[in-house]
Image 1 (spheres, rainbow, N blue to C red):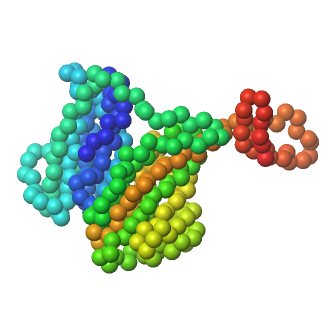
Image 2: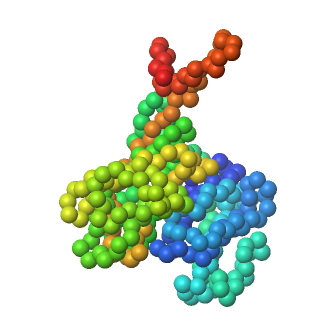
Image 3: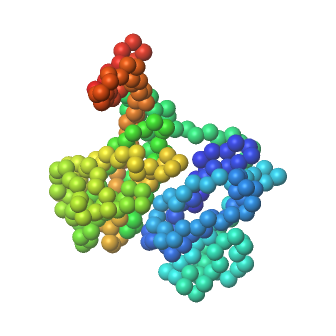
Length: 285
C-alpha cells in the first residue's frame, strides 16, 4: 500500500507499507522516478515485516501524475508472476519469485502539506490517531506515527487483550526495527528487558483477567531520519491479541541554550540546562 504524505505539484512524498501479509516477506522493491535525479530507481528491502518500510519522493510526469510500482518477492505466497520487471528492480529468482506487482498513479495537481501539529517547547501534544480497534487475527500488526519537529519523546498508550483460546507464550513490542519481548502473563509494574535488543521504560496496568494497559516512553533516538516512528506488536501465532484505546502524546523539547559570557579562568564552567522559556521568565537547572 501507499500513503501519500505530501504533494508539491512537481513531486510527491509517500510511504510504502507492507500490508500484503502478517508474515515477514523475503523482499519488497519500490519503483519510481526519483525527484532528486529524475532517473528511474527501485530501492528494495529484505526480510520486510508488516508496516511502513520507508518514505520516498517521486518526480511527477508531464501528465500530472507520479507513477509508483511495488513489487513483492516471496516463496510463501502465490501465484508466482511471470512478467518483465522494471530494469532498475531486482530480478526474480527461484528462491525469490515475484508474487505481486502493484502499479499506482498519484495526482500531483492537488497541494497536500503535512498535517502534523506544531510542537511548542515545554508543552505536550496529543497526536492524530488512525488506529482503530484491531481484532485478534494477525500474528503481527504495525502502525506509523508522524513525529512533529522538536519532539523529544513519544508516550504510547494502548489496551492489549488476549483471547481465551490464545496458547502463545511469546509477545513482542516493535519499535522501529527492534523487538522487545513482553512476558506472557502481562504482569503489572515497570519493566526493562535486558535480554531484548532494546530497553524501554514500560508500565503495565492490569484491567481484568484478559486485558492490560501498556504505556511506553519512546525517545527520539528511535525515530527515522524523516521523523516517523513505526511501532507494533507480534506473537508467534494468530488469533491471540486485540488492541484498542491507542493514544499518542508528544513531549516537546525546549531548544534554547545558555551562552557563557564570562568564563572564570582555570575552572570548568558549570552547566545550565534550559527547561522552559515563557517570554518573561526562564526556568533552568
